[in-house]
Image (cartoon, rainbow, N blue to C red):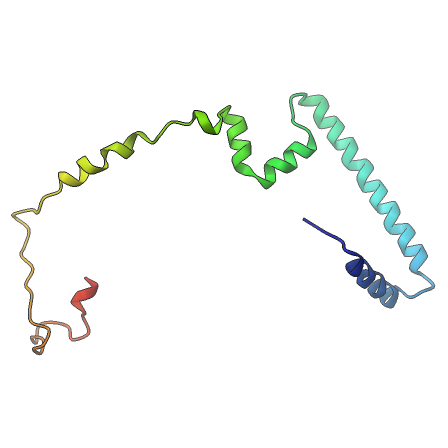
Length: 132
């Protein structure tokens, strides 16, 4: 979120004074204020037209809150409370899945060789079996 502390406002004022100059600064400030007022009235006009066509739309503050916290938006849309959520149904099946794993008897056997001896000629010398 944008926070304007007094130090930041002072820096902005000094930079504006240097860039625009003291003679034109009031005129530029008035123009910026006019642009801001026109922007606000335009956004309010658009918002009122949208609300006229979609009356169930949440307020702008609620939309901003939802944008900052998408989980609360999803919970609201789903109509769920945190207490009403059920446990994952697949969670209880994990031990049964692990018990069913077996070594395939038809799989080729891995050959192991002593790491202290030099590798055979057919094996890549840069291959490290610990990473396999």
